[in-house]
Image 1 (cartoon, rainbow, N blue to C red):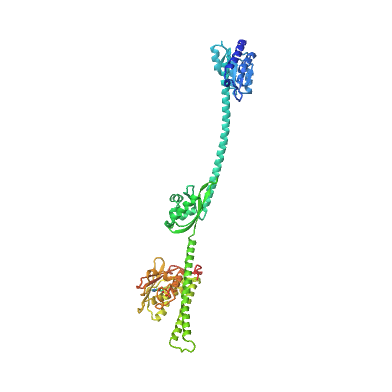
Image 2 (image 1 turned 30 degrees about the horizontal axis):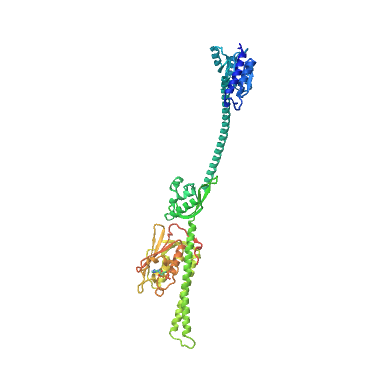
Length: 561
Ligand code: ADP
Protein backbone atom coordinates (compact mmCIF):
# COMPACT_ATOMS: atom_id res chain seq x y z
CA UNK A 1 0.00 0.00 0.00
CA UNK A 2 1.40 3.34 -1.00
CA UNK A 3 0.34 6.76 0.02
CA UNK A 4 0.27 9.59 -2.49
CA UNK A 5 3.73 11.06 -2.41
CA UNK A 6 3.53 14.09 -4.65
CA UNK A 7 1.60 16.26 -2.22
CA UNK A 8 3.87 15.43 0.59
CA UNK A 9 6.93 16.12 -1.50
CA UNK A 10 5.86 19.56 -2.47
CA UNK A 11 4.92 20.60 1.02
CA UNK A 12 8.02 19.06 2.52
CA UNK A 13 10.24 20.98 0.16
CA UNK A 14 8.66 24.30 1.01
CA UNK A 15 8.71 23.68 4.74
CA UNK A 16 12.30 22.70 4.54
CA UNK A 17 13.35 25.86 2.81
CA UNK A 18 11.37 28.22 5.00
CA UNK A 19 12.54 26.59 8.23
CA UNK A 20 16.14 26.66 7.02
CA UNK A 21 15.90 30.40 6.66
CA UNK A 22 14.68 30.74 10.25
CA UNK A 23 17.31 28.42 11.82
CA UNK A 24 20.37 29.83 13.50
CA UNK A 25 23.77 29.31 11.94
CA UNK A 26 24.79 26.80 14.58
CA UNK A 27 21.69 24.74 14.29
CA UNK A 28 22.07 24.66 10.54
CA UNK A 29 25.79 24.14 10.51
CA UNK A 30 27.16 20.80 9.34
CA UNK A 31 27.93 18.31 12.07
CA UNK A 32 31.65 17.69 12.55
CA UNK A 33 33.33 14.48 11.51
CA UNK A 34 33.18 11.55 11.83
CA UNK A 35 30.57 11.48 9.11
CA UNK A 36 27.47 9.65 10.16
CA UNK A 37 25.48 8.23 7.27
CA UNK A 38 21.69 8.35 7.04
CA UNK A 39 19.97 5.48 5.29
CA UNK A 40 16.66 6.33 3.68
CA UNK A 41 14.53 3.40 2.57
CA UNK A 42 11.52 3.98 0.34
CA UNK A 43 10.30 2.22 -2.77
CA UNK A 44 9.36 5.58 -4.29
CA UNK A 45 12.30 7.43 -5.89
CA UNK A 46 10.39 10.66 -5.53
CA UNK A 47 10.00 10.24 -1.79
CA UNK A 48 13.70 9.47 -1.55
CA UNK A 49 14.61 12.71 -3.32
CA UNK A 50 12.30 14.71 -1.09
CA UNK A 51 13.82 13.23 2.05
CA UNK A 52 17.34 13.75 0.67
CA UNK A 53 16.54 17.34 0.01
CA UNK A 54 15.15 17.89 3.48
CA UNK A 55 18.16 16.33 5.14
CA UNK A 56 21.03 17.65 3.05
CA UNK A 57 21.55 20.60 5.47
CA UNK A 58 22.58 18.20 8.20
CA UNK A 59 25.75 17.84 6.22
CA UNK A 60 26.17 14.16 6.49
CA UNK A 61 26.20 11.50 3.86
CA UNK A 62 22.80 10.23 2.75
CA UNK A 63 22.47 6.73 1.35
CA UNK A 64 19.23 5.52 -0.21
CA UNK A 65 17.66 2.11 -0.69
CA UNK A 66 14.49 1.36 -2.62
CA UNK A 67 13.62 -1.93 -0.90
CA UNK A 68 13.99 -3.77 2.38
CA UNK A 69 16.58 -6.15 1.01
CA UNK A 70 18.61 -3.33 -0.52
CA UNK A 71 18.50 -1.61 2.87
CA UNK A 72 19.81 -4.73 4.56
CA UNK A 73 22.70 -5.02 2.14
CA UNK A 74 23.56 -1.30 2.63
CA UNK A 75 23.64 -1.98 6.38
CA UNK A 76 26.12 -4.76 5.81
CA UNK A 77 28.54 -2.38 4.07
CA UNK A 78 28.76 0.30 6.70
CA UNK A 79 27.34 1.91 9.78
CA UNK A 80 24.51 4.45 9.85
CA UNK A 81 23.52 6.93 12.45
CA UNK A 82 19.83 6.41 11.70
CA UNK A 83 17.55 4.57 9.23
CA UNK A 84 14.43 6.29 7.87
CA UNK A 85 12.22 3.41 6.89
CA UNK A 86 9.08 3.62 4.83
CA UNK A 87 6.46 1.35 6.31
CA UNK A 88 4.61 0.52 3.15
CA UNK A 89 6.78 -1.11 0.57
CA UNK A 90 6.02 -3.87 -1.85
CA UNK A 91 7.53 -7.29 -0.97
CA UNK A 92 9.32 -6.92 2.32
CA UNK A 93 7.53 -4.08 4.13
CA UNK A 94 9.05 -1.74 6.70
CA UNK A 95 8.15 -3.91 9.69
CA UNK A 96 9.77 -7.04 8.24
CA UNK A 97 12.81 -5.02 7.24
CA UNK A 98 13.06 -3.56 10.78
CA UNK A 99 12.83 -7.02 12.31
CA UNK A 100 15.68 -8.29 10.13
CA UNK A 101 17.76 -5.19 10.91
CA UNK A 102 17.33 -5.89 14.61
CA UNK A 103 18.24 -9.53 14.21
CA UNK A 104 21.62 -8.83 12.65
CA UNK A 105 24.41 -8.28 15.07
CA UNK A 106 25.97 -5.52 13.08
CA UNK A 107 22.81 -3.44 12.75
CA UNK A 108 21.09 -4.43 15.99
CA UNK A 109 21.47 -1.01 17.62
CA UNK A 110 20.92 1.31 14.67
CA UNK A 111 17.96 3.64 15.44
CA UNK A 112 14.98 3.22 13.05
CA UNK A 113 12.47 5.94 12.35
CA UNK A 114 9.39 4.78 10.51
CA UNK A 115 7.99 7.12 7.89
CA UNK A 116 4.28 6.53 7.51
CA UNK A 117 1.06 8.15 6.43
CA UNK A 118 -0.82 10.11 9.01
CA UNK A 119 -3.82 7.89 8.55
CA UNK A 120 -2.06 4.75 9.84
CA UNK A 121 -3.88 3.52 12.82
CA UNK A 122 -2.59 3.14 16.29
CA UNK A 123 -2.16 -0.61 15.85
CA UNK A 124 0.36 -0.02 13.10
CA UNK A 125 2.26 2.39 15.25
CA UNK A 126 2.39 -0.09 18.11
CA UNK A 127 3.67 -2.78 15.80
CA UNK A 128 6.36 -0.46 14.57
CA UNK A 129 7.65 0.13 18.12
CA UNK A 130 7.39 -3.60 18.78
CA UNK A 131 9.80 -4.39 15.95
CA UNK A 132 12.32 -1.82 17.14
CA UNK A 133 11.33 1.60 15.90
CA UNK A 134 12.60 4.47 17.97
CA UNK A 135 10.24 7.02 16.43
CA UNK A 136 7.53 7.65 13.88
CA UNK A 137 7.31 10.45 11.39
CA UNK A 138 4.03 11.15 9.81
CA UNK A 139 3.41 12.25 6.28
CA UNK A 140 3.00 14.85 5.18
CA UNK A 141 6.45 15.53 6.46
CA UNK A 142 7.37 18.55 8.53
CA UNK A 143 10.95 19.45 7.52
CA UNK A 144 11.93 21.03 10.86
CA UNK A 145 10.64 18.14 12.92
CA UNK A 146 12.27 15.64 10.59
CA UNK A 147 15.62 17.43 10.66
CA UNK A 148 15.66 17.90 14.41
CA UNK A 149 14.80 14.26 15.02
CA UNK A 150 17.39 13.02 12.54
CA UNK A 151 19.96 15.48 13.86
CA UNK A 152 19.52 14.08 17.39
CA UNK A 153 20.39 10.60 16.15
CA UNK A 154 23.27 11.77 14.02
CA UNK A 155 24.71 13.67 16.96
CA UNK A 156 24.12 10.70 19.20
CA UNK A 157 25.96 8.49 16.76
CA UNK A 158 28.84 10.90 16.52
CA UNK A 159 29.02 11.30 20.26
CA UNK A 160 29.04 7.56 20.79
CA UNK A 161 31.70 7.25 18.07
CA UNK A 162 33.78 9.93 19.77
CA UNK A 163 33.22 8.16 23.06
CA UNK A 164 34.30 4.88 21.51
CA UNK A 165 37.38 6.60 20.06
CA UNK A 166 38.12 8.16 23.42
CA UNK A 167 37.69 4.77 25.04
CA UNK A 168 40.17 3.25 22.57
CA UNK A 169 42.54 6.13 23.15
CA UNK A 170 42.16 5.76 26.91
CA UNK A 171 42.64 2.02 26.72
CA UNK A 172 45.82 2.56 24.72
CA UNK A 173 47.05 5.15 27.20
CA UNK A 174 46.17 2.81 29.99
CA UNK A 175 48.19 0.05 28.39
CA UNK A 176 51.16 2.38 27.99
CA UNK A 177 50.79 3.39 31.63
CA UNK A 178 50.54 -0.20 32.78
CA UNK A 179 53.65 -1.03 30.78
CA UNK A 180 55.45 1.88 32.39
CA UNK A 181 54.32 0.77 35.83
CA UNK A 182 55.49 -2.78 35.15
CA UNK A 183 58.83 -1.42 33.92
CA UNK A 184 59.21 0.73 37.03
CA UNK A 185 58.30 -2.18 39.25
CA UNK A 186 60.99 -4.24 37.51
CA UNK A 187 63.55 -1.46 37.99
CA UNK A 188 62.46 -1.14 41.64
CA UNK A 189 62.96 -4.85 42.11
CA UNK A 190 66.42 -4.73 40.51
CA UNK A 191 67.32 -1.70 42.59
CA UNK A 192 66.17 -3.23 45.81
CA UNK A 193 68.05 -6.41 44.93
CA UNK A 194 71.24 -4.48 44.26
CA UNK A 195 70.69 -2.49 47.46
CA UNK A 196 70.35 -5.75 49.36
CA UNK A 197 73.49 -6.99 47.62
CA UNK A 198 75.54 -3.99 48.67
CA UNK A 199 74.21 -4.13 52.20
CA UNK A 200 75.14 -7.80 52.34
CA UNK A 201 78.58 -6.84 51.05
CA UNK A 202 78.94 -4.16 53.75
CA UNK A 203 77.93 -6.75 56.31
CA UNK A 204 80.95 -8.81 55.36
CA UNK A 205 83.36 -5.87 55.72
CA UNK A 206 85.86 -6.46 58.53
CA UNK A 207 85.70 -2.77 59.48
CA UNK A 208 82.76 -1.16 61.26
CA UNK A 209 80.41 0.40 58.67
CA UNK A 210 77.48 2.73 59.30
CA UNK A 211 75.09 4.75 57.15
CA UNK A 212 72.74 7.61 58.00
CA UNK A 213 69.65 8.90 56.20
CA UNK A 214 69.01 12.37 54.86
CA UNK A 215 67.81 13.49 58.29
CA UNK A 216 71.10 12.44 59.92
CA UNK A 217 69.66 9.45 61.79
CA UNK A 218 71.85 6.36 61.49
CA UNK A 219 69.73 3.60 60.03
CA UNK A 220 72.34 0.95 59.23
CA UNK A 221 75.21 -0.69 61.11
CA UNK A 222 77.07 -3.63 59.59
CA UNK A 223 77.65 -6.95 61.28
CA UNK A 224 81.18 -6.04 62.43
CA UNK A 225 79.77 -2.96 64.15
CA UNK A 226 77.02 -4.93 65.88
CA UNK A 227 79.50 -7.60 66.96
CA UNK A 228 81.77 -4.86 68.34
CA UNK A 229 79.09 -3.19 70.49
CA UNK A 230 77.26 -6.47 71.21
CA UNK A 231 73.81 -5.19 70.21
CA UNK A 232 71.35 -6.15 67.48
CA UNK A 233 70.43 -3.75 64.70
CA UNK A 234 67.14 -2.67 66.29
CA UNK A 235 68.79 -1.91 69.66
CA UNK A 236 71.63 -0.06 67.99
CA UNK A 237 69.26 2.00 65.85
CA UNK A 238 67.28 2.81 68.97
CA UNK A 239 70.32 3.79 71.09
CA UNK A 240 72.20 5.56 68.30
CA UNK A 241 75.93 5.46 67.72
CA UNK A 242 76.73 7.92 70.53
CA UNK A 243 75.71 5.67 73.41
CA UNK A 244 78.98 3.72 73.34
CA UNK A 245 81.27 6.75 72.95
CA UNK A 246 83.38 7.60 75.99
CA UNK A 247 81.60 10.38 77.97
CA UNK A 248 84.69 12.58 77.66
CA UNK A 249 84.66 12.30 73.85
CA UNK A 250 80.91 12.28 73.21
CA UNK A 251 80.18 16.00 73.04
CA UNK A 252 83.09 16.65 70.66
CA UNK A 253 82.04 13.75 68.40
CA UNK A 254 78.40 14.84 68.20
CA UNK A 255 79.41 18.42 67.42
CA UNK A 256 81.77 17.36 64.60
CA UNK A 257 79.16 15.02 63.16
CA UNK A 258 76.39 17.66 63.28
CA UNK A 259 78.58 20.32 61.66
CA UNK A 260 79.86 17.99 58.92
CA UNK A 261 76.34 16.79 58.23
CA UNK A 262 75.02 20.29 57.91
CA UNK A 263 77.82 21.34 55.55
CA UNK A 264 77.80 17.95 53.84
CA UNK A 265 81.53 17.69 54.29
CA UNK A 266 83.58 14.56 55.06
CA UNK A 267 84.89 14.19 58.58
CA UNK A 268 87.48 12.18 60.51
CA UNK A 269 87.04 11.50 64.19
CA UNK A 270 89.21 9.75 66.74
CA UNK A 271 87.47 8.77 69.95
CA UNK A 272 87.06 5.98 72.49
CA UNK A 273 84.16 3.61 71.96
CA UNK A 274 83.04 0.93 74.36
CA UNK A 275 83.39 -2.64 73.14
CA UNK A 276 80.89 -5.27 74.23
CA UNK A 277 83.34 -6.53 76.88
CA UNK A 278 83.27 -3.06 78.44
CA UNK A 279 86.74 -2.06 77.26
CA UNK A 280 87.11 1.32 75.57
CA UNK A 281 88.91 1.09 72.24
CA UNK A 282 90.30 3.93 70.17
CA UNK A 283 88.28 4.29 66.95
CA UNK A 284 89.05 6.22 63.79
CA UNK A 285 85.73 7.07 62.13
CA UNK A 286 85.72 8.37 58.54
CA UNK A 287 82.37 9.73 57.38
CA UNK A 288 81.40 11.27 54.04
CA UNK A 289 78.19 12.31 52.32
CA UNK A 290 76.81 10.02 49.64
CA UNK A 291 74.34 10.50 46.81
CA UNK A 292 71.47 8.41 45.53
CA UNK A 293 71.08 7.35 41.86
CA UNK A 294 69.48 10.69 40.95
CA UNK A 295 72.55 12.48 42.29
CA UNK A 296 70.64 13.91 45.28
CA UNK A 297 72.09 13.99 48.83
CA UNK A 298 71.08 10.76 50.55
CA UNK A 299 72.90 10.93 53.90
CA UNK A 300 76.33 9.93 55.22
CA UNK A 301 78.25 6.70 55.08
CA UNK A 302 81.25 5.87 57.20
CA UNK A 303 83.67 3.24 58.37
CA UNK A 304 85.54 2.85 61.63
CA UNK A 305 88.85 1.18 62.36
CA UNK A 306 90.13 0.08 65.75
CA UNK A 307 93.33 2.10 66.13
CA UNK A 308 94.01 1.24 69.76
CA UNK A 309 97.29 -0.49 68.95
CA UNK A 310 98.41 2.43 66.81
CA UNK A 311 97.49 4.87 69.59
CA UNK A 312 99.32 2.72 72.11
CA UNK A 313 102.46 2.59 70.03
CA UNK A 314 102.18 6.35 69.43
CA UNK A 315 101.82 6.77 73.16
CA UNK A 316 104.82 4.50 73.75
CA UNK A 317 106.87 6.34 71.14
CA UNK A 318 105.97 9.64 72.78
CA UNK A 319 106.95 8.28 76.18
CA UNK A 320 110.12 6.77 74.76
CA UNK A 321 111.01 10.09 73.15
CA UNK A 322 110.38 11.95 76.37
CA UNK A 323 112.46 9.38 78.22
CA UNK A 324 115.18 9.64 75.62
CA UNK A 325 115.19 13.39 75.93
CA UNK A 326 115.38 13.26 79.72
CA UNK A 327 117.95 10.54 79.37
CA UNK A 328 120.25 12.50 77.09
CA UNK A 329 119.92 15.54 79.29
CA UNK A 330 120.71 13.67 82.48
CA UNK A 331 123.37 11.50 80.87
CA UNK A 332 125.24 14.52 79.71
CA UNK A 333 124.76 16.24 83.04
CA UNK A 334 125.66 13.25 85.22
CA UNK A 335 128.54 12.11 83.05
CA UNK A 336 129.99 15.56 82.88
CA UNK A 337 129.93 16.04 86.66
CA UNK A 338 132.84 13.62 87.36
CA UNK A 339 134.67 14.92 84.31
CA UNK A 340 134.37 18.47 85.56
CA UNK A 341 135.63 17.32 88.93
CA UNK A 342 138.66 15.59 87.35
CA UNK A 343 139.46 18.60 85.21
CA UNK A 344 139.14 20.90 88.24
CA UNK A 345 141.57 18.94 90.41
CA UNK A 346 144.04 18.53 87.56
CA UNK A 347 143.97 22.30 87.16
CA UNK A 348 144.65 22.79 90.88
CA UNK A 349 147.51 20.31 90.70
CA UNK A 350 149.04 22.16 87.77
CA UNK A 351 148.65 25.54 89.41
CA UNK A 352 149.75 24.49 92.93
CA UNK A 353 152.69 22.35 92.01
CA UNK A 354 154.32 24.22 89.19
CA UNK A 355 157.96 23.56 88.61
CA UNK A 356 159.96 23.97 91.73
CA UNK A 357 157.08 23.97 94.24
CA UNK A 358 157.43 21.28 96.94
CA UNK A 359 154.76 18.61 97.06
CA UNK A 360 152.63 18.85 100.24
CA UNK A 361 149.86 16.84 101.92
CA UNK A 362 147.07 18.26 99.69
CA UNK A 363 148.51 16.67 96.64
CA UNK A 364 147.38 13.21 97.73
CA UNK A 365 143.83 14.32 98.40
CA UNK A 366 143.53 15.93 94.95
CA UNK A 367 144.71 12.78 93.26
CA UNK A 368 142.29 10.74 95.38
CA UNK A 369 139.39 13.05 94.29
CA UNK A 370 140.36 12.53 90.66
CA UNK A 371 140.42 8.76 91.13
CA UNK A 372 136.98 8.87 92.83
CA UNK A 373 135.50 10.84 89.95
CA UNK A 374 136.93 8.26 87.56
CA UNK A 375 135.31 5.46 89.57
CA UNK A 376 131.93 7.27 89.53
CA UNK A 377 132.32 7.70 85.81
CA UNK A 378 133.09 4.04 85.44
CA UNK A 379 130.03 3.04 87.53
CA UNK A 380 127.79 5.32 85.50
CA UNK A 381 129.01 3.90 82.23
CA UNK A 382 128.73 0.33 83.48
CA UNK A 383 125.13 0.87 84.70
CA UNK A 384 124.15 2.65 81.52
CA UNK A 385 125.52 -0.18 79.43
CA UNK A 386 123.67 -2.72 81.45
CA UNK A 387 120.41 -0.69 81.21
CA UNK A 388 120.87 -0.37 77.48
CA UNK A 389 121.67 -4.08 77.01
CA UNK A 390 118.41 -4.94 78.80
CA UNK A 391 116.42 -3.52 75.89
CA UNK A 392 118.21 -5.56 73.27
CA UNK A 393 119.28 -8.90 74.68
CA UNK A 394 117.16 -11.98 74.20
CA UNK A 395 115.45 -13.03 77.44
CA UNK A 396 114.75 -16.73 78.05
CA UNK A 397 112.16 -17.50 80.69
CA UNK A 398 112.08 -20.57 82.91
CA UNK A 399 110.64 -21.62 86.28
CA UNK A 400 112.92 -20.42 89.01
CA UNK A 401 112.69 -21.18 92.73
CA UNK A 402 112.89 -17.88 94.60
CA UNK A 403 114.52 -19.13 97.79
CA UNK A 404 117.81 -20.53 96.34
CA UNK A 405 118.10 -17.51 94.06
CA UNK A 406 117.68 -15.05 96.94
CA UNK A 407 120.12 -17.03 99.10
CA UNK A 408 122.70 -16.71 96.36
CA UNK A 409 122.10 -12.96 96.01
CA UNK A 410 122.35 -12.18 99.72
CA UNK A 411 125.26 -14.55 100.47
CA UNK A 412 127.89 -11.96 99.56
CA UNK A 413 126.04 -9.18 101.35
CA UNK A 414 125.87 -11.26 104.50
CA UNK A 415 129.62 -11.86 104.22
CA UNK A 416 129.99 -8.08 104.25
CA UNK A 417 128.08 -8.12 107.55
CA UNK A 418 124.70 -6.89 106.37
CA UNK A 419 121.65 -8.39 108.06
CA UNK A 420 119.23 -9.68 105.43
CA UNK A 421 116.44 -12.00 106.55
CA UNK A 422 114.81 -14.32 104.07
CA UNK A 423 111.32 -15.26 105.22
CA UNK A 424 108.67 -17.37 103.41
CA UNK A 425 109.95 -17.52 99.82
CA UNK A 426 109.17 -21.09 98.76
CA UNK A 427 107.30 -20.08 95.59
CA UNK A 428 108.66 -20.47 92.08
CA UNK A 429 108.21 -17.87 89.36
CA UNK A 430 108.58 -17.79 85.60
CA UNK A 431 111.55 -15.56 85.00
CA UNK A 432 115.15 -15.16 83.92
CA UNK A 433 117.84 -15.99 86.41
CA UNK A 434 120.25 -13.21 85.42
CA UNK A 435 117.55 -10.56 85.39
CA UNK A 436 116.11 -11.72 88.69
CA UNK A 437 119.58 -11.54 90.33
CA UNK A 438 120.05 -8.08 88.90
CA UNK A 439 116.66 -6.93 90.24
CA UNK A 440 117.12 -8.28 93.77
CA UNK A 441 120.76 -7.09 93.98
CA UNK A 442 119.61 -3.57 93.19
CA UNK A 443 116.60 -3.62 95.53
CA UNK A 444 118.50 -5.15 98.47
CA UNK A 445 121.53 -2.84 97.98
CA UNK A 446 119.19 0.16 98.09
CA UNK A 447 117.45 -1.22 101.17
CA UNK A 448 120.79 -1.52 102.93
CA UNK A 449 122.00 1.85 101.67
CA UNK A 450 119.08 4.21 102.30
CA UNK A 451 119.01 4.11 106.11
CA UNK A 452 119.40 7.15 108.36
CA UNK A 453 122.97 7.75 109.47
CA UNK A 454 123.93 5.61 112.45
CA UNK A 455 121.00 3.24 112.10
CA UNK A 456 121.51 -0.49 111.48
CA UNK A 457 119.71 -1.59 108.38
CA UNK A 458 117.16 -4.43 108.66
CA UNK A 459 116.02 -6.05 105.45
CA UNK A 460 113.30 -8.73 105.11
CA UNK A 461 112.47 -10.73 101.99
CA UNK A 462 109.23 -12.61 101.51
CA UNK A 463 107.15 -14.04 98.64
CA UNK A 464 103.37 -14.06 98.49
CA UNK A 465 101.58 -16.21 95.90
CA UNK A 466 98.23 -14.59 94.95
CA UNK A 467 94.93 -16.06 93.72
CA UNK A 468 95.53 -14.37 90.35
CA UNK A 469 98.39 -16.74 89.51
CA UNK A 470 101.03 -14.14 90.29
CA UNK A 471 103.72 -14.07 92.96
CA UNK A 472 104.61 -10.83 94.73
CA UNK A 473 108.09 -10.77 96.23
CA UNK A 474 108.69 -8.05 98.82
CA UNK A 475 111.95 -6.32 99.82
CA UNK A 476 111.23 -4.47 103.04
CA UNK A 477 113.60 -2.08 104.83
CA UNK A 478 113.69 0.22 107.85
CA UNK A 479 115.26 3.04 105.85
CA UNK A 480 114.52 6.70 105.17
CA UNK A 481 111.38 5.98 103.15
CA UNK A 482 110.13 7.81 100.06
CA UNK A 483 107.44 10.50 99.78
CA UNK A 484 104.47 9.27 97.78
CA UNK A 485 104.94 11.80 94.94
CA UNK A 486 108.24 10.09 94.08
CA UNK A 487 106.96 6.50 94.08
CA UNK A 488 106.83 6.43 90.26
CA UNK A 489 109.56 8.93 89.46
CA UNK A 490 112.36 6.98 91.17
CA UNK A 491 112.06 4.25 88.50
CA UNK A 492 113.26 6.68 85.82
CA UNK A 493 116.91 6.95 84.84
CA UNK A 494 119.03 9.27 87.02
CA UNK A 495 116.14 10.13 89.33
CA UNK A 496 117.77 10.47 92.73
CA UNK A 497 116.19 11.99 95.79
CA UNK A 498 119.16 12.29 98.12
CA UNK A 499 122.48 13.99 98.46
CA UNK A 500 125.19 12.07 96.62
CA UNK A 501 127.69 12.46 99.45
CA UNK A 502 125.34 10.82 101.98
CA UNK A 503 123.95 8.19 99.60
CA UNK A 504 126.26 7.61 96.63
CA UNK A 505 124.89 5.94 93.49
CA UNK A 506 124.23 6.37 89.82
CA UNK A 507 120.42 6.73 89.80
CA UNK A 508 120.13 3.92 87.25
CA UNK A 509 119.46 0.95 89.54
CA UNK A 510 115.65 1.23 89.75
CA UNK A 511 115.39 1.96 86.00
CA UNK A 512 117.22 -1.34 85.44
CA UNK A 513 114.82 -3.06 87.88
CA UNK A 514 111.71 -1.80 86.06
CA UNK A 515 113.04 -2.66 82.60
CA UNK A 516 114.16 -6.13 83.69
CA UNK A 517 110.75 -6.84 85.24
CA UNK A 518 109.03 -5.67 82.04
CA UNK A 519 111.18 -7.96 79.88
CA UNK A 520 109.93 -10.91 81.97
CA UNK A 521 106.29 -9.75 81.72
CA UNK A 522 106.26 -8.58 85.32
CA UNK A 523 105.74 -5.33 87.25
CA UNK A 524 107.47 -3.48 90.09
CA UNK A 525 106.34 -0.87 92.54
CA UNK A 526 106.87 0.55 96.01
CA UNK A 527 104.84 1.18 99.13
CA UNK A 528 106.52 3.71 101.38
CA UNK A 529 106.04 6.62 103.76
CA UNK A 530 108.86 9.12 104.20
CA UNK A 531 110.85 8.27 107.37
CA UNK A 532 109.05 4.96 107.85
CA UNK A 533 110.94 2.51 105.64
CA UNK A 534 110.00 1.16 102.20
CA UNK A 535 108.48 -2.03 100.75
CA UNK A 536 109.52 -2.62 97.16
CA UNK A 537 107.66 -5.39 95.32
CA UNK A 538 108.15 -7.44 92.15
CA UNK A 539 105.24 -9.29 90.58
CA UNK A 540 105.79 -12.30 88.26
CA UNK A 541 103.72 -15.28 87.04
CA UNK A 542 103.79 -18.33 89.29
CA UNK A 543 105.78 -21.25 87.86
CA UNK A 544 104.04 -24.22 89.48
CA UNK A 545 100.90 -23.83 87.35
CA UNK A 546 101.96 -26.00 84.46
CA UNK A 547 103.88 -23.18 82.78
CA UNK A 548 106.55 -24.36 80.48
CA UNK A 549 109.82 -22.58 79.85
CA UNK A 550 109.47 -20.15 77.02
CA UNK A 551 111.41 -17.36 75.37
CA UNK A 552 110.28 -13.81 75.85
CA UNK A 553 112.40 -13.64 72.80
CA UNK A 554 113.54 -10.71 70.85
CA UNK A 555 114.75 -7.41 72.03
CA UNK A 556 112.17 -4.74 72.72
CA UNK A 557 112.38 -2.47 69.66
CA UNK A 558 110.48 0.39 71.32
CA UNK A 559 113.38 0.86 73.71
CA UNK A 560 116.24 2.97 72.51
CA UNK A 561 119.22 4.33 74.25
P1 ADP B 1 120.76 4.92 93.23
O1 ADP B 1 120.51 3.89 94.26
O2 ADP B 1 121.99 4.66 92.44
O3 ADP B 1 120.69 6.31 93.75
P2 ADP B 1 118.32 3.96 92.14
O4 ADP B 1 117.77 4.07 90.78
O5 ADP B 1 118.56 2.61 92.65
O6 ADP B 1 119.58 4.86 92.19
O7 ADP B 1 117.34 4.70 93.15
C1 ADP B 1 116.83 5.95 92.79
C2 ADP B 1 116.48 6.75 94.01
O8 ADP B 1 115.39 6.19 94.70
C3 ADP B 1 117.58 6.74 95.05
O9 ADP B 1 118.55 7.71 94.78
C4 ADP B 1 116.80 7.04 96.31
O10 ADP B 1 116.56 8.42 96.42
C5 ADP B 1 115.49 6.34 96.08
N1 ADP B 1 115.49 5.01 96.71
C6 ADP B 1 115.73 3.81 96.12
N2 ADP B 1 115.61 2.80 96.99
C7 ADP B 1 115.28 3.35 98.18
C8 ADP B 1 115.01 2.83 99.48
N3 ADP B 1 115.07 1.53 99.72
N4 ADP B 1 114.70 3.69 100.45
C9 ADP B 1 114.65 5.01 100.21
N5 ADP B 1 114.90 5.57 99.02
C10 ADP B 1 115.21 4.75 97.99
